[in-house]
Amino acid sequence: MFKIFKSESAINFMGLRKLAIVFSVIMMSLSVFSVFTNKLNLGLDFTGGTVIEVGFAQDADLQKVREVLAVNGFDDAVVQNFGSPRDVLVRLAPRDDVKAETIGSQVLDTLNEQLGQQVSMRRIEFVGPKVGDELTEKGGLAMLAALICILIYVAMRFEWRFALGAVIALAHDVFITIGLFSFLQLEFDLTVLAAILAVIGYSLNDTIVVSDRIRENFRKLRTGTPSEVINISLTQTMSRTLITSLTTIIVLLALFFKGGALIHGFATALLFGVFIGTYSSVYVASSVALSLGITKEDLMPVEVEKEGEEHDDMMP
Image (cartoon, rainbow, N blue to C red; front, side):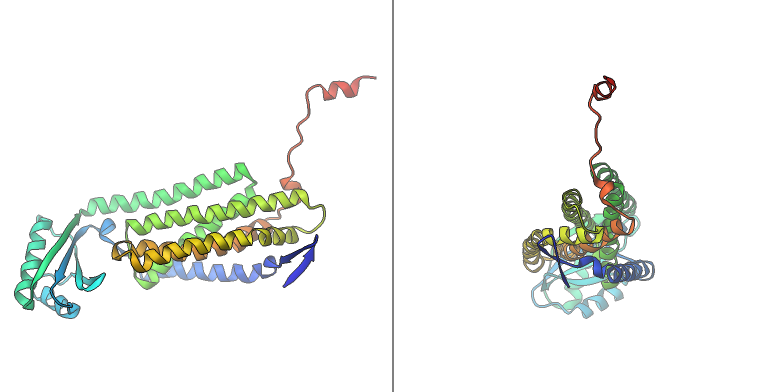
């Protein structure tokens, strides 16, 4: 697994690139399949509707709450715990010409009358379906715009092969993270969308660091195949990548376990995104650049002809 090259012990990352490409293609295919079959469990930010948070004096029986609401005309209610067994979140689809406060009062009165224990109202939120459609459209456009801007920036800053590799790696991270939420049917709301955009930034940062080191080594090392140079570059940046990832994961674990239900989806998306982003920076972006035939000549600086140099050559 280790190969000595220029007095450095370089891990042969590119030796596993074909296996990594197969793994990534399978994961992306499963993610796309899950999104088309299972769909996303969109939150009220996107679908519109009313969300009601209520508190029970004792641990709530979710199945009984669902039955009571269904019998009283709320058969479309989605009922789940919210942080603790005594806190319950009820989500309802939009109802024409009925205000959120009215729906909340009806749900609260129904639960108090039918369950035989004190139920208190915590909060009520309402999102119209038109607003939800606009958020869905603008959220998708935001991710697309981010990828296009990244493609342009990396192409100008490095080389088009690195740019294409970076964008494919970012699309890889986004698709697989969305696929996870589709497969597990986790709620996908605006906080999760924000987390995915943060994953794009995090993964891009790692990819830029790796690409910069690859470019530097292509110019510095006189011998060695492109695969060997990339292996050395990845090995040199591995300690930085692992330290950054581990410190980020520690913070995200604290948010995941102690941050509460409101940011649970955000922490989940970022946790998974950090893992998949680190993997894609090492294997996806670099493998794409190598497959496209990146060479030392592509990364050498362009020689600028000095003014008057041609005139001097013509003098006897």
